[in-house]
Length: 308
Image (cartoon, rainbow, N blue to C red; front, side):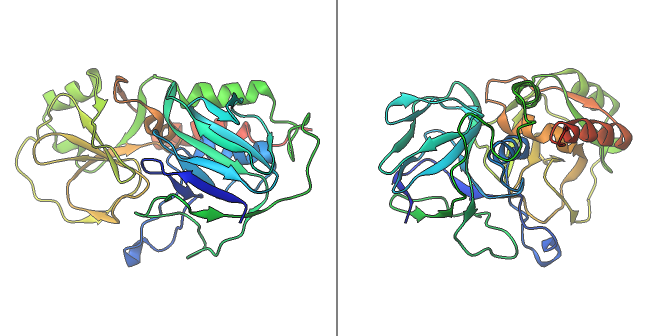
């Protein structure tokens, strides 16, 4: 094999864009928590943007390589070191046989991504390589079918991904501006006071956050009257009101249906921002519309479009 795990991280996995079209069978989509950082790393390497990557949390796994690859690390800054020398984020890096990659400490963000140039040599399940539940273990081994080594002075595959565009994407992912949400079917069932509180006060992510959901700690919310909700389909970014008045945001490994009050949906382009927020980050919300969500999505997508 070519990539070996020499130290197990806290909850590291392999993820790609996820497996869609099976939720009606009770199968979660899974996939990247921060799709923008994962996509950026793949784009820099010239990989298909939906390609599998290592999704890394801190304390992080350590890796050794038994053959040469080109890699790119994006997302959170955990101070990556190759053979005990610091390496840059969002940059194509050549690793050679017997090189060791480690992460020293969390500086910014909570999820880092390692993309490998080429194609993973592993069977997909339902069109995806995304892990669910199981994490990477010590002594696990993986292999990528690498493409011919490119000129390291050039960004492989897409020379138009400039440092300016990279900085714009990072600035968006690590922005602390309010998260946009579209009101859901239970939003109107909140008391008027609870609606005002939700839109005007800050929340922070609870310590129990994981790939299934991020609990939000802050002001408790109340419905205008007790209500029973039919179980309905949910997705990543769904804002659920729990019976105790606390909030839960569903993330990549969310259940396929839910029966809690659905207060709304965090828009797609803001989900990476929530995914990367630390437990100390003050999180605020701003009501928006589907039209605005589409506009913001198009603005992000344009940053990945080839410019001649």
